Image (cartoon, rainbow, N blue to C red; front, side, top):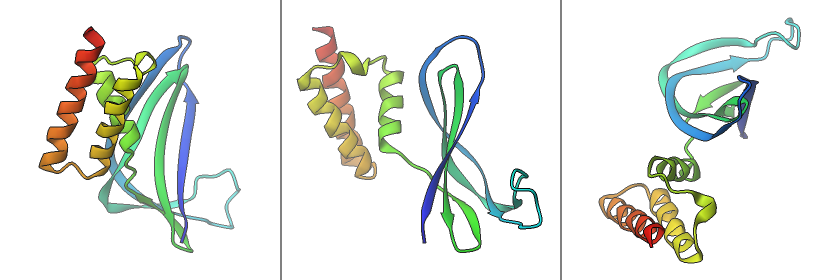
Length: 142
């Protein structure tokens, strides 16, 4: 059965803001199509007794939420959304590393960090991530 990523986008301000991504945890839901409702009405829904990960952020004058769903044939059900790329961008932002200024050598370390994040965050992966992040920051100071 297919999975879907849905992005809700709203304009939230008059000033342009830089890209920000944050992982959030919130209640999961299940959403059902009701043919008796107007197509623009909110679907029938029920809260599930679990929580899921999703991404929220801002860019320019917009606020967005990115959530993932599984279509099981009768409903859309919230599922965890995890993005190692988003986690990497958030990590770099927290460390004040500007991606557009990275050299080819720093990009090598960036790819290693992303690989380690995809590898599940084992103890060795965490050590490697710290090592490569420190290399990127040291190269930025030169």
